[in-house]
Amino acid sequence: MNIEKNKGIIFLAVVLLIFTLTGCFEAKNSYEWVLEAEYDKIYDFKDGKACVEKGEERWMIHSDGTLTEIDMDRDYDYLKYTITKTKSVGSDNQELYGIENLLGETILEKKYEYISYSSNESIVAIESESEPRFMFFNPEGILVAELDKRDDPKVMFAFVRPFSDGYAAFHENFRCGFLNNKGEVAIEAQYMEVGDFKNGYATVVKGVPTDVHGINEYRWGLIDPSGNYIIDCEYTSLGDYSDGLIAFSDGGAVGYMTIDGDTIIQPQYANASNFTDGTAYVIPKSFLSFIKMPVWDLNQVGAPYYLIDKDNNRLWTFRKEKGFGFIDKQDNFIYVLSIPNEKIGLIKNPVL
Image 1 (tube, rainbow, N blue to C red):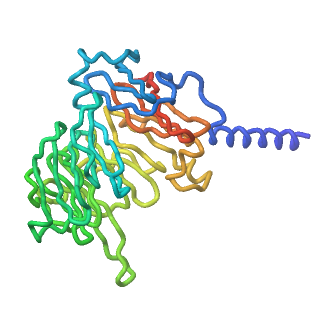
Image 2 (image 1 turned 180 degrees about the vertical axis):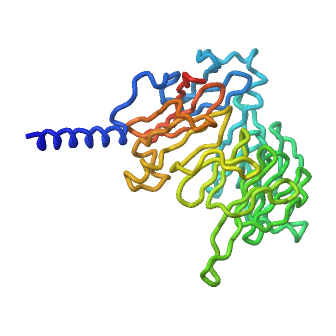
Image 3 (image 1 turned 90 degrees about the horizontal axis):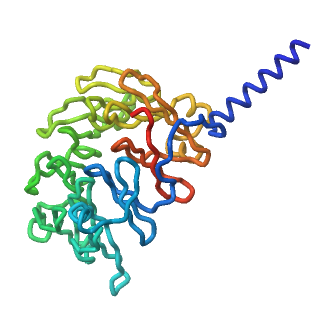
């Protein structure tokens, strides 16, 4: 009889574990909704406020969580320098792109076959992808540098990303390098892939020989603006240098280390964000092994996200049954993307 009772307890414990891991149970009061996930766009916070859009309507959300209608007199400068990509269709059904600010003012006309812009609103545009002339603009649409493949036979770039920290990544002959803000090659194309320069460093990928002849493995490292290795290419993944730490993977789990390579948090997570203001988001490796699913599918099943500090203390947990993924964290808000309907909302972290 005791055996049967124990079986029942074990069965109940297993059921509770499954429900907990799949997001059917949520801790009460673990987070506070500021905006339900029903908005089309939420722009980055700047000076304690951000622009929120739903259809044709637009509001300003302030750092205290209040929403107000857009006041063009008060918020003109803020909206003027918040840009967005626009699209039209040319006479030959070719998709063409431009840039506008939130006031609807044209920054770049819709005549470019390719446009990309970064969070700091640096813009790179190409009029014709078949004969590219890479043009770099500031947020006001003023041309600051250009590389013309038609005039300079040395320009063989397949793409150029917007400037970040004064450098733009480019791709040439299946290798990546960096340009300076004058459009000159600062670091020769030699990497399989690169990240953007952030906080003075950039992640890069190189092929490292294996025991099998002729077979290389891709490994990540970190360089400075002179191209010197700060961290050698020996990791299967590497995050940006942020808030004094770098997320890294040894092939099986993610942990954190300093710029000097000292491990601060041992590899133990399935996925992890960069640290910002002393905290980072992580997904426990136990969840990944339990569902036997790739990391990129975790949002579809409502993976638990833990907020940790630099001492690896767990501060709080967020999970949603239908699956939510964190986009960014600024001014004590966390941007949340609803996977099924791709709408955006905000929650407020009570511990920050």
